[in-house]
Image (tube, rainbow, N blue to C red; front, side, top):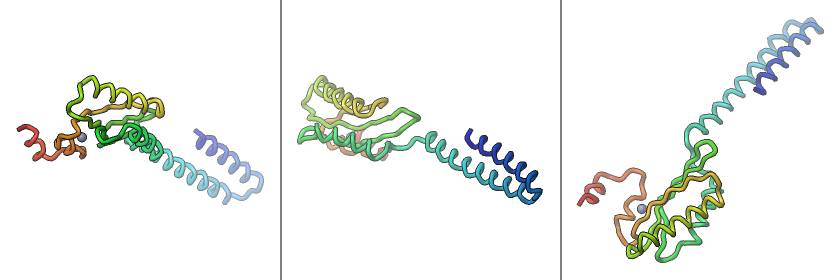
Length: 159
Ligand SMILES: [Zn+2]
């Protein structure tokens, strides 16, 4: 939108200068400057919108904020891993695994997940938090750090 204003202004200035000075060479020069400006603005807009359309991870500052919340809860029995974040427009999406002792009740595990999810939303509003609860002592819990599980692992899981 601002480009349109600049372009129009540039054209007016160009025509004005050509009229006043009678120098015809000024007109294409102004036109070139305006064209360069449109190209640059277009390039910048494309960059901004493409990063908004293609989901990006949260900024480091926000990821650090999440990690410091983890630190408040983390101890020998409670661990976190597989933290993944992305932004889509104004929304933030955060997911991670919460590892607790297998002897915990569903209620205990869920209460912890709720507390951490709430703590994150307090610090980072408009965040959709998804947690995955796992028994900390089970090796399988530690084999799912990657986005894609290998077929070997999947075969093992089936056993
Ligand atoms: Zn895991």
